[in-house]
Structures are given as C-alpha cells and as structure tokens.
Amino acid sequence: MITRRDVLSAAAAAFAAGHISPWALAQPIARTAHILTGFTPGLQDGLARLVAGQMSGYAETIVVETRPGAAGRIAVEAVKNADADGSAMLFSPLGFMMFFPHVYKTLRYHPRDFTPVSTVASTPTLLTVGPMVPVDVKTLADFVAWCRANPKHATFGSPGAGTSLHFLGAMLGRSAGFDFLHVPYQGGGAIQDLVKGVIAATVMPIGSALGLVQSGDLRALATTGPRRSPFVPAVPTVREAGYPSLEDLTWFAFFVPAKTPAPIVDKLNTAIQAALRTDEVKAGMAKLAVEPDAIAMEDFALLIASESDRWKAIVQATGFVPTD
Image 1 (cartoon, rainbow, N blue to C red):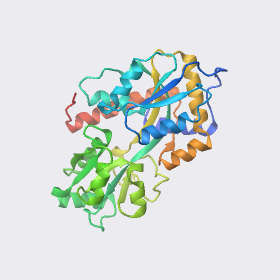
Image 2: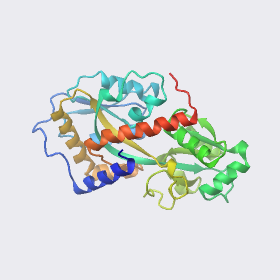
Image 3: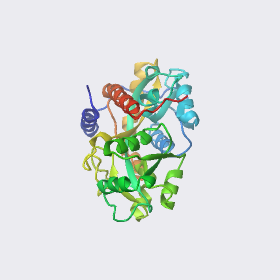
Image 4: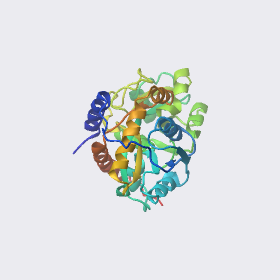
C-alpha cells in the first residue's frame, strides 16, 4: 500500500524536476471559473486566492467564493452538484475526502463524486504550550511528565471536536498514557485562551501560533511533519520526540466534479503547477507558513485512499461516535 512517505518522496522529486502535463488548451475556458472554499476568510481562503491569482491562463476570470457552514460541507456539496465543465472547483483540506466519512453519520457526497486535481500546499500541526505550563517544561517528554503529574491541568484546545487536530491530541494522550482533556474552540479562540493560561496546550496548524512562538509568548514542543519545519527549525518532530504515530500533514488541494472531462482536468492541473512555480505564490505561501506541496494526480487518489484507511482506524480507536 502506498504511504504518505512514498507520496511525499515522489512528489518532491517531480516538483523539483518541473514535471507537469505537456497538454494544455490554447485558450482559457469560456465561462468564469469559481473556486469554492468551505470556511470564513483565513488560511484556506488566502491560499485559494494566492494560487488563483497566478492561474490566468485557465479561465478569463476566476472568482474565489467562501461558502462557510456545516464544517465546510456546504461548499463540498455545491461543487458536487455544479456543472462538470471546469467552471466549478473545490479548494479544501484533504480531510473533507479522507476524514469526514469517518466522523459524520451521513454525508451528502462521497469522495468518488470528485476528481482530485492537485495538492498545492501542506502544513504540519504544532503542539504549543502556554503560561499554565512551567517554564522548565521544554520538551514533549517534559510535557508528558507534567501532564501525568497534573492531570487536572492536562488540557488542550483545537478548532473543534471531530477534527483531525482533536484526534492528534487524543492520540498523544493514548500513546503517552495520560488523560489529555480536549477543549473544542471555533476560530482563534484556542490560541487566545492558551495565552491567557486557561488551557495548557493547543494542537493547531503551525501558522496559528507562529508569531506568538517567535515572540516567546508561547512555546512550541513538537511538529507533526515528516521533517522539521523551516518556520520553526529548532522544534523537533513528533518522530524525533518518540511518537512517530502522530506524524501528520494537512494538505490543501483542488477538486472538480467527477464527470469533468479529462482535457479540462489536465488544463487545470497544468495551470496549478505553473502557479506554484511563480515567485508570487512561493513568497505568499511563506507568509502563510505553509510549504508548496504538489502531488501528482496518479498518486493523489492513492494518498486519499491510504489516509482514509489510517484515519478510520484512528477514529475508531478513540471511541469517537460519529455525529450528524
């Protein structure tokens, strides 16, 4: 079975070599193209607009629309039901396809309703602690020992119950043998309470706490990527810290309705790969604390299937009950 490491290695080689589909239509598609995102303006919306701004050869006009609601599912359903002519795209975390099927009782879509076009970026998760945790806690091992000794304070915040970040925190508690109490938040509330000392830790995308870590207001103990992040190079990975099962990346990617003709999918993929190689996109991603990460289409679908199996096992192991 293909693994995350296999895909990452192959993708890195292809991206560095500049391998993109040689096929492209001479003219942009006639209709205005719409890119739908599932959350209010933030990282996902910013990434979509950044890439769309360098995809002028795909369509004469590209509009990025936020369709928040139902944890992003409204946007997914809208693209599923859109015309399969290349004019509607979904830009989302891969979790919408590989994770949601395991945390919701019913979904009005299935991953097979979409054609995966390309990933564009990835980011590891950052385990960060705040002023509730003593300053002599400097490593993940120190933090685990402190949580065991202070079970009433062993708390972590995430963007919400049933998210992958929730389960990463739960996995840490299970792996290290302590009760790690989850406190769900919306928006940036978790980071705000972490700074105030209301909770001990957060499990959030690296960009959420990067400025506060750099200023010294918060302490980053580990990242979940397969290698150290260039944004916090002094922070070890979870594998280095002794918890390889927590290794994880959040990918952001483009999808189109399943029946979109292959020539249009090829054209879109070519436009995305070209955009990712521009200085504007590279610089913009650095500001958002994400890294360009393009996975070839033939590996992309395999990655979704492999990650779906992995997350299914994780969700079941935690005893989480799927919700509506």
